[in-house]
Each structure stands twice: as C-alpha cells, then as structure tokens.
Length: 196
Image (cartoon, rainbow, N blue to C red):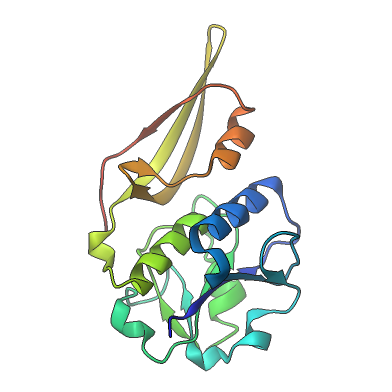
C-alpha cells in the first residue's frame, strides 16, 4: 500500500499564498493527501497533527537538510511522507528542521534536493517517487521570474525556489500567479531543466 502524503501546517496563520499552495497540492494528490494542524473546508484536513494519525517511526519527513535523497525503495514499510506546511525564506532559515525534523527524531529524514521547493512542488515530487520515479528523472528549475507590465513600468517578482517542470513548465498554481500579479497578464521566465 502506498504511503499517504501529509502536509503539516506550521505557520501561525493561513495566508492566501499558503491556501493557494494547499489547494494546488490537493489537486495534485487528491485523497492521498491530508493537511494536518488546520481544518480547511473542501480539502481533506484535520486539526490533529500528523503524529496523532501516524506513528512517526513509520514516516519520512522531507527536509532539505537531510543527508540522503528520497528514493522509491525508502517507501517500503512507510505509512507517511510528511511535508512542512511552511512558506520558504530567502536565504533558507532551516525551519523544516527546527519545526518538524528535530521534533520527531524517530522519523526517517530525506531530501528531494538541497534547495527549497514550493509545497505543491514537494507534493508532486513525493507522488512521483511513490509511483516509482527517481529524483534524477524529475526535471526541475531553480528560480522563477514573473514579469508584468503596467503601462510603461515593468514589474518583476523573483521566486528563488525550486519547482518541478511539468510539461516543460514550472509547477506553479494559477491561483498563486493571480495572487502575485493581481490577475493581470504576465510572462514567466525560468531556467531550463536541472536537478542537483
């Protein structure tokens, strides 16, 4: 039986950005996903924490600071893959380790690369690993630039995180793009496939 994917909500509030990531994650993984630590209508979620639902010794926590990469064979006998429901910081502050990994020493820790991924990107990669793919087979890009022109002014938004490429494009939800651009037109610029 495939492990479930849990997003452990770790922020003090539910921002619109975080909600967009959670909805995108739910569309990617469907009922294989549970968001813990907060109830969100319409998404499989609970106010309980992941360790109240699953034995942490049978869980893998995805943490960029983990020593080893996640591989399909790591999933044997595992009930859960746990992803931190945390918005990234630049430079990284190691919050996944502080808020999640260090609290559950009995859990296995794995990374999907040493860089920070979006939450929905992490869910996508976890699901691909569950399906048997290896990290090196999943193309990613490091950083996205969103360009928007308002009259004669060009506005740029830099997202210095890692994103899986799906169909040759970075996995970023339309809701998040609308939130960041105010719903106006934009251009998306990114670096071509890379995996570290």
